[in-house]
Length: 294
Image (tube, rainbow, N blue to C red; front, top):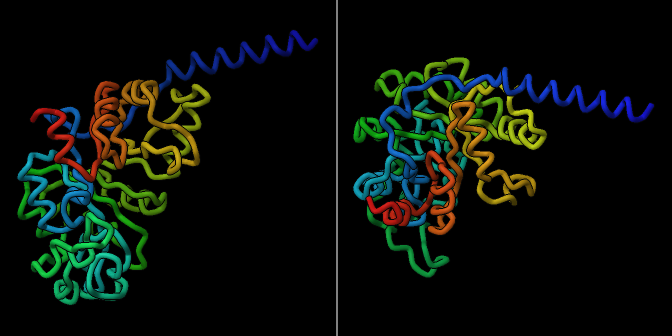
């Protein structure tokens, strides 16, 4: 009796496996990757390991050295302007205090956006007092209209999804932007108002996708995103090693791009490039560009 049940279970699993291969729904199409180099050098916050992150100074330097994509963090101000800064508060990176949502763009422009940036654990602050300001997203679109962007949105009290979509449409950047977020609700809301813009998997989507893959059931997964940007470090993913050759191969079979973060070690970059990643999010775009001999 037990043998019959076991055989029946095997038969069910086999049928499910075959069905998954046959069904295998693909990621939605996007023009974002048309004519894109591979792998993409994605400058995290413009290269926060080299210059003060999320500043025009960092983005200008990332473009200058040849980065392919500018990655950034978007917040909305009290006067409904979208600005770029990693944290919800200005305290850690600037000489000010307070929530971004409680400040106007003009108030943010008075702050020194490079005040606390240091590469020697606070022994020196090389860009303090250099007039580096908090940038607005539209300033970046106007400065670099031909660049590709990854824009990470946070959960905010004031809705950011519609203003962000309006700004992307106003500057005709629909095919130049990937919107990302750790938050499932933020990602769901953005897709609802701006379906024409490519998106990355949210944290919940990454979790579901990875767990199904561990069970060899990726073929049943219907992705609503065009790229997945997993952490390279298992400590950032509940101890699960996400980045493997199989993960990349199976994702590509579903037309999903793979762009891990935040990879600053050239040896790890080299390994992922050999495995076929589509891009690497890095604080050290200078090292990746040197590795690629571009």
